[in-house]
Length: 231
Image (cartoon, rainbow, N blue to C red; front, top):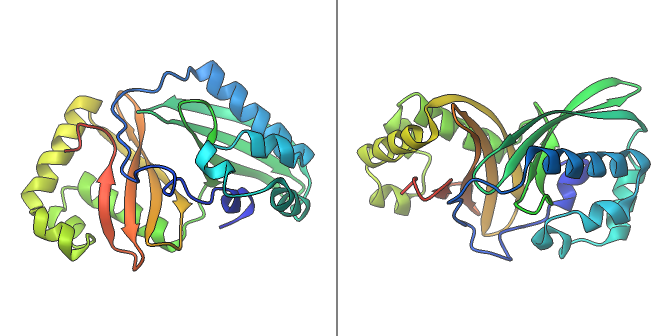
């Protein structure tokens, strides 16, 4: 993980990893933009204390300001930042932004919780192992490859879910979300423990939602959650 990815630590330890996203977030686009601009400005000015205070509680409790400052000081100078898109989802908001350095522009994907705090983020386009598996799993669902998608689940989960169950769940999710459009990107929120969490941003007609894909320590999917509709 890079730069602030190391700040994300774990949201798994502080709450059930399959936390339900049952309602659309109350965070407005204006509030999301303001929260993101604050984070980006702090990133540009290397203000570790500001970043630390604007992390989600479960993330903030696992890292100190000094560690954040060390990572910020190791990065190239940021010349400017810009928010280019805000998409509210179920209990989370996905924000697309751009950071400009001497090397050019770099797109960033940020995910905010209901309070506008930073839950997860990454440089867009950079894919790690767990992210690739989570992306492939969701793409298999979107393409109707139920057997292939099921093969990425742990054996225990496969014993509980037939391919037809995945079809039913995904079809129901599409129906309540207005239909599938695209899989945007994935962000690791927790890695290296007995439970590992990847958030996959999925764009539907009515909303962009973050699919919680939970892995065991060996990299097999042990749970998937996006809303009470995915049951």
